[in-house]
Image (cartoon, rainbow, N blue to C red; front, top):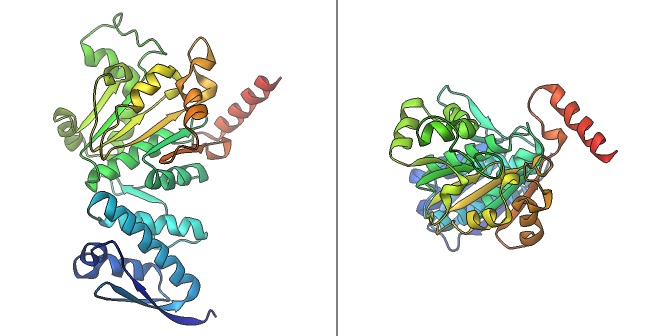
Length: 319
């Protein structure tokens, strides 16, 4: 059995009342996730007792919550739960009864990271303002990104969600389709609607869309805008040109975050090298505040044959 030790930790650069929650509700949630420990707050000091490894993990959780509090000006129960879940992923253990949870669905289910790639995307999105999620179809890149956006909206980290994708291949030629603007673009944006409808009650989603709290638009309609306090997702980014990618990235304003998803092997552009997703990695990798997460065949969460299909096409490409 691990030796029990005592430790005192002083909270700096954060308001303890906001960090610990009303009546220490967040602190109790942290303590409950580590049943072999005791955590007591006195002023801006934490007094901890328990196994050293557990105390180290608690302090890492507290440090991450301080970062979130300073960034957003507030903490939510969802923030605390997510940081605890990520802590459990790193340690290889499950704590708090819902490891990897991102949000709860209207039907009572839980959206959670199911693969290594999805877990890395959740971690990257909490630590970076712009994250590129790159990998094959069926790995849950878009679904996880939308879940993170909805979670951020629910916890008031952002004021709106903007989801976009190139509408028709790279050219976005909508004129030949029948109907009004929405009729023309809906078929190309349907996957984004599908994800949202699983995570937000239908009536609330309709209200969000009517009030532009949630926007789903073709990439071309992003030009000229500045998006503040928004969670922005660019899906199917392999079909954005270099200029379109630069245009999208420079729309991001104060307090905003972005996730860009795509599969560089499925670009519809005439020349693969014109893909803004490929160029972005060459230009932006290593820039502070921008992260890249690579998904692989092991992250596929669709039909079991999808992994085999991807592998077969990869072999054919090599040959």
